[in-house]
Length: 102
Image (tube, rainbow, N blue to C red; front, side, top):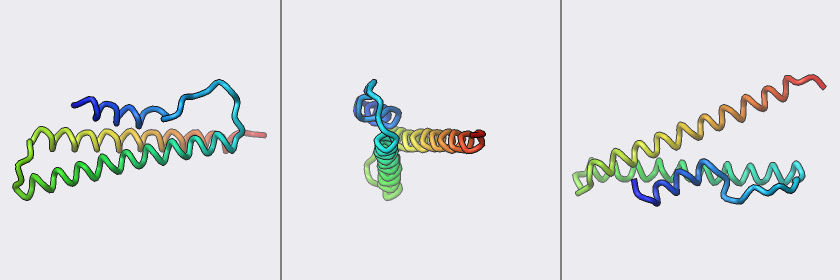
């Protein structure tokens, strides 16, 4: 895996903007999370499209290294699984909050 691939994987796992110690309003926090999630989903989509493209090239018989096809496919799979786990955790947290007594 090259350095660009590692940086792409890291961008999915952490926010693009540094986390500040200043308190933010709920609206700002929501917008920040929304932006981060949109970027993560776009990265996952790009990984899926890249995997589909390189797999299609191999299927057409173009000169593509099998290792690159497998690495790209696995990268797409891992990013999708990670995104699904983040989504599941967010839903669990939301459901837990909704069950709280006020």
